[in-house]
Image (cartoon, rainbow, N blue to C red; front, side):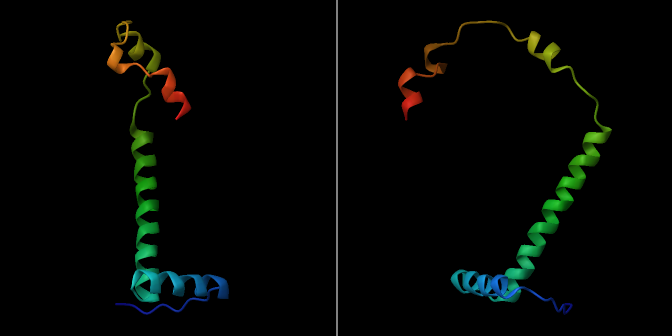
Length: 85
């Protein structure tokens, strides 16, 4: 385990303390899990961008043109009163 000293604005520190207390964890645990979550999101974004670069472009209109043009069954239709919900 490593030790890291960081400087936070007082407002963020107080907010972190309140949230950690609400969650029943220490501020260290909150910061650690929050940082892990952020790193995971950034890694996922990088991975998806790399995959997208390797991918091939598709003509979505050509794909949709293969879908038969049929009437919807009544159970698949959106009722007009559903718009007002």
